[in-house]
Image 1 (cartoon, one colour):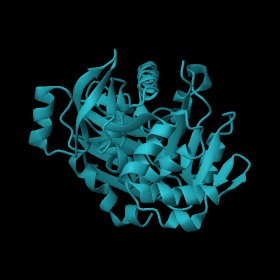
Image 2 (tube, rainbow, N blue to C red):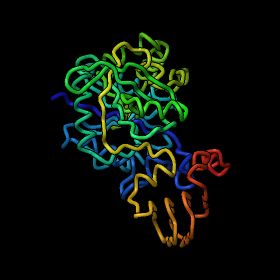
Image 3 (spheres, rainbow, N blue to C red):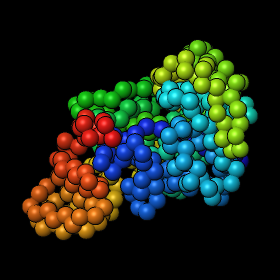
Length: 345
């Protein structure tokens, strides 16, 4: 069996989950679903018991204390400290240039929730098998609702027993197009989880974004090791263009493939997504902390201190974090990141 190296990308601020998520303790390091942080849950899914190699975590200096604390019980874990945020193409390239060329990387965001761990492991193994044959593989999340906040993959012709070519990458659609995708079938959410062999990823990056590979290569060549940490040279890395791996590589390669994955996935991208991922009562309510609800439906209340009482409301989000209080409709939750409190956290 091919050993899979998890490459865990740990960045971003999660402003849409303000006030719980703040610059000092952003989304990956919060126990938003269950008692485990999203980052720790990601590491646990990719354990040695499930056949994974020790993880490589790519993060910024600001997040380093959280990462090291939560990796303390993970033998062999390595950390690459990005000198600056330059999006996912550069982050993945940093990891690729530190790994053997025949290694299979499984790129995982650190801030997603996956409820079905066995399904994740099975999909990861199928994706790694395809990657070993030279494909660049996305896990396609089964699209059960017409979401407009995700990119989509259109399934193409079969490859082997469990994979397919990617016929098309689609940017975030409007509501009508998303509903059409669900009605037609064969469309999957692009969840940002990828598998590819190091040498194949680097070859595609060289073909389509040579300037990114050149600058990252210089940053790695001039970097320094510090125990389990690796610090790339900040000078060359500052010249790297910020671009996602989707735009830089996946939408350009002729070897794009996908493996369908139905694994209770959520990107936990906003407070309604948190509500959907948590246990709910018969009326669809989810609560945490000292909360009392009367005649409420589809309400999320999360308080870290004060008692919160809510009566007669539907589709409302209430979050209390220390001295900050958020009250919004579920629809309005998409705009939380625009609040001055979230921007200036």
